[in-house]
Image (cartoon, rainbow over all chains, first blue to last red):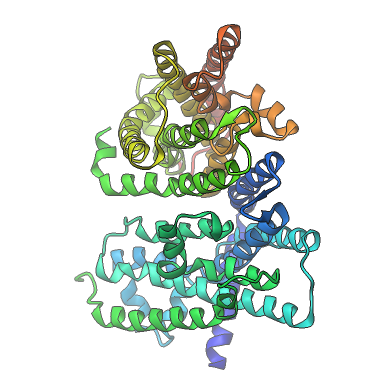
Length: 264
Length: 252
C-alpha cells in the first residue's frame, strides 16, 4: 500500500512535469479548458441578467452547483486521467507491457496521463463555489465544512472510478473510436444546474445511470438547508461512490481476465 | 466527404454529444419562461426554435473539420498539400465543405427529429425569410470555416491542438449566439458579439428565420456578414503565407 502510494506520487509527478515542459501547450491547454467551462458560466451570467431565479434557485446557488461539479472534475483530470489512454493501449496491444511489470496494472493505467489543464477547472470551480457560497444564504457550521470536504473527496473518487468504468469498454469493444465514454463523461454538464428543471427521464439518467447528481445537486441541498424529500440523498453521496468503486473494480477484474492481447 | 462517411457512428455520436446542451438549455428556458411571457423580445415558442436550430447550425463545421485542418499542420502533412498547384486556403475550405455535408445532414436529421417530436419548432417567418435564411447559413458556414482555418494556423506554434480546439469551440459557442441569443447578453458582451463576424454563424440566420430582423436592419445584417466574409477571405490567405514563412515544420 505504502509502496503503491509512493510509486503513484512519483509517476504522477513525472507526468505533470512532462506536461509543463511544453510551455505553449501548457498555457493553451489551461486556457482552452477554462474557456470551455467558462462559456457555461458566461451563459449563466447572461441568463440571470434576464431572470431572477430559476425553479427557486438564484444565480449564486447555481454557482455553487457549478463549483461542486467542476472542483472534483479538475482534480480528476489532474490526478487520474490515465484511464483515457486505456482504450488506445488495448487497441494497439501496448497493454501487454503493462501486465508484465511488477506493479499493479490499475496504478500504471492511472499514471499514464496527467492532464495539466485540470488546473483551469479546479480554479474556476473553486472561484464559482466560493462566490456562490459567500453570496447566497449558506450558513456555515463546522459539520457543513466537514461535509463539504468529504463531498469533494468522495466526488473526486467517484469521477476517478467513472473514468475507469467508461473506458473499460475497451476490453469488450476493441476499437478505440467509440464515443460512448465521452458521452457518458459529458453527462456531468446536466449536474451543473438544479435537477428540478429537468424532465423525469433526465432526472433518472443523472441519478441512477450516471450518478452525477450525487456530486452537485444532492450535496448542495444539504449545504443550503433545503428541506425536500431528496435532501437525505446528499448525505448518502459517499455510499454511492462506494457502490461505483466496487462495481468498477469488479468489472476491471473481469476485463483483465478477458484480455487476450491483440495477437503478437 | 468520403472520409467523413467512413466513421458514421463516431460522427453521429460527436454531434449527439453537443446536443446534451440542447436539453439543458431547453429545461432552463422552460423554467425561466414560467415566470414571464417574453424575455428580451423572445417568446417561449421562438426560444425553443432558436435553441434547437442554433445547435443544428453550430454542428456544421464541427470538431472534425478543425481537427483535420490542425492535424495537417501538426503532422507536417502540410508539405504535401503545398506541392499541389492549388491555393491552400481554398482547398482547406473546400475540404471543410465536404466534411460538413455529412455533419450537416446528421445535424439536420437530429434537428428535424427532435424538432417534430419534442420541441414543436416554429416554421420560418415567411417564404422570403426561409430563402434568406439559407443564404445567411451559407455565408455563416464560410465565415466559420475561415475562422477555424485561421485558428488552425496557430498550430504552427503548438504541439497539440486540443486546447486550441476547446478555446475555439467555446468562443464560437458564445459569440455566435449559440448558447444565448445576442439580444439577451449583458451589454459589454453584446457590443463585442454584434461587431464580430461570429454572429453570422448562428445569430444572423436565426434572426432572419424568426423574422426578428426586417427591412434595412436585415440588409445591414447581411451586408455586415458579406463584408466580413470578404475581409476574412483575403486575410486568411495572407495570414497563412506569413505563418508558413515564420515557422519551420515539425521534423521537416
